[in-house]
Image (cartoon, rainbow, N blue to C red; front, side, top):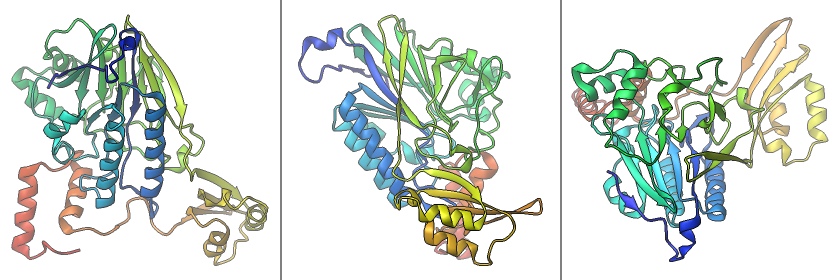
Length: 403
């Protein structure tokens, strides 16, 4: 990779007085089901809003920083949705740079990437080759190199660097960056690893994976060579150490712990000297995630006096007082049709009732289920050789077509 791309798409000399701008998003988790609810309609809505921001602001590029899909084998609707999204953005003249995350199958995500690069859509999914993928875009002040680092496990780094790979993860990442061709201009990083500030911690939420594939948390100092680090994996929007190192956060709320989070998409302006100015553009979904609590009667009373549109949001409900009727969920859903979870606090012993948890079986072939299990156990999707072994084993057992 490493294309030199002119951003002068309208024939105007104004481009020579214009800073580089880009939108930063990630953790789309397309195809996700949350407590039994299909989030595809909500994902389509929020991606249309992001496309609208691209149409209004006309950034030079849109960065998508991993966990594009929620699973290695995304459902058909999720694949169609991504296709619609990147095509719509690309048709606006906005370049798309996308990397794989720990939820993605790198091989599947990068399929067709060489052809799509001709339309300004650049995908880095591979984790087994050097140098690291990069794309070079230009503004009025020169070139900006976008270094595209897909999700990596410790084993990937050892394979890429060979026997001389440093044991320390931070040193290993610096060694990876050193394999890039020399470049004296401004650099931006896309990454889907777990970075921590030199002091303090970051905000986490319940919808994130508990691990990132066995790699220790990396110090933010590993990113000192970049004017802006566009990070994925953490679902709460936040800066890490400095304003120009930032988790964009997921565009939607995927757990009750995110109910009070403010979702946004960073709009970044990169000046001549490499200073990054960040504007957080709010993202407001049609259906939000809400947390409410109270006695059964108080919740029914509140619903009766609430605007019907407000009752269409997703609700995590806690019943208090111990006087709930046996059909509480059904009766509450008359007023709040999208209850994701119902908890009951009685005599200091909370109980939880919902129709399905976040990891419920939603259909799919035996091969898909096995691949999901493989990913949970190994922190990555199975590669092509492992998928062939799965297929061969299922064929020999006569299970290949099991739903």
